[in-house]
Structure formats: structure tokens, C-alpha cells
Image (cartoon, rainbow, N blue to C red):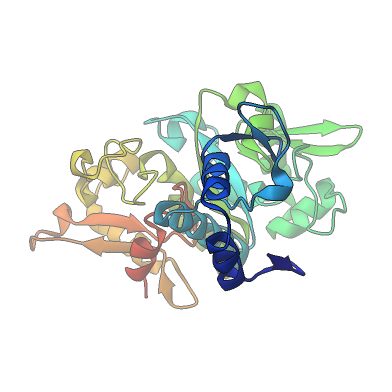
Length: 316
């Protein structure tokens, strides 16, 4: 019995007990022998629609609930850090190898530019949707006129930026906002991670002048960050925890072109936001060269959210 969508289970049980034994058997049989089609309950034998005779509820187990909570938590994390843009990169290929024409400072600027791509069209726009033209982009970047002219020319020449009738557009094989199923074909063979827009912008605005090149390391480490655990490693696409091969600081320094690993340590430690480190270190030995590195998921994160809380704890 139902009243205003409220089920009176006690009344239903009493009504069932009051039924004739044969009628009870028919009721039990009906609940065991029906199919659901487009939300309608149908008797498997007679084809009769029996939706009005049954109360069907979805069966939700603990795993389903936990999965939903993980998805919701990841969505909250994304919102807290200003949403994200997909940053694409080639597996195991260094950013310097991909962009030999860009300096470290330029790489940091490119990462910053990526946070302004529009939803699916990849135009450069402000958060309110207004287009960002050449002049406004220079103002956003905070560069001198001559330095910006050189940088802008390099971006156009190498296809990173395109001047179209509808405005400036960013190569979608670098950055993209929108459903990945709608991403351009040239992204299909690339790896990607979420790059959080507010975090990257806040970091960029904290650095200025010559110090901006220090921020490039955030972009440079993308090809080496494990998708699920945010640890820098040799096999970033490995999903089985026991098979992940962490990369030492000495090895990372070599990948990034640092002759002295201690300079890399200093560079990583200097990058903080609201006094929270972007890079965390751990080691079971005293040798600093063997330290391992974890990246704060408030900056980049590619996982499905399952291990997000465990990583975030490391940066409290």
C-alpha cells in the first residue's frame, strides 16, 4: 500500500498474510517471473504489464555507492581548483624534445596560456567568454613588448597559436577543454592529464621576471607522472601499484637537463602555493639523489579519484 509515495511496509505485510494461500503463490510467482523494459514491468509468460502491481527498486551495493562517492569527490576537487583543462603530451618524450624552440620561461607561459582555452573550440577566451586577442594575451602574460613579440611570433610559426577569423586558437593537441570523446583526432595517440586552471594561474602570478622559468618544471614533469598515484616514475601508465618504478631525483634531473640534482631539489622546493608545496619528497635512504617525488594533485591529476585522498594527505 502506498500513500503519497510513502510505503507502509507493515500494512503491506499484513495484507499479504490475509491473502488466500493460492493467491500468495501467484503473487510470489509474479515477483519472480517478470522483465523490465524501458522502465515497465512485464509478465514473462503473459506479456501483461504489471507495473501497477509491483514496487521495483534498484539494488545498490556498497561498491556502487563507493564508486558514486569517488566520482562526486573528484568533481568537488576539480571545482575547488577552478576546473581543468586536458594537457596532452607524448609518452616518455621530454617537453624540451617536443618544443626545442621554447625556453624554460616560454614553457611556463605556454602552460599558463593553456588554462584559457574555450570549451571544445579551443579559442583563447577569458572566463566570461570574451575573446583574448594578441594585445590582451601579452597583457595577461605580463611580458615586455619586445619579449612578447618574439614569443608570439614563435607560437604562430610553430602552429601552437593560430590566427583565425574567429580569434586566436590553441593547438588542441596541446590543451583541450570538453568531453574527450569529442576531442580532435590528433589527440588520440597522446597521453593526457588534468591541469587545474586556478592553481596554474595562481602559481604563474606568484612568479615574475626571471623567476618564471622555475615554474616550467611543473609542465616538464607531465610525461613522467603516474596517472593514478601522482608519483614521478619510469612507467607512468602502469596501474598495478607493485609494478610502478619510481624515478629518483638524480634520474629526474637527468631527464630535465639538470647537471646537478641539488639545483632541481631547490627548484622544486621553491614552488609553493598558499605555503603548500607542489612537490613532495620521500626517501628511505640518506642519499638525496635517491629521493622520490610526488606531485600535489591540486596542480595536476589524471586518476579516477580512487586514490585522490591518499595523495592529498601527503600535502597537508
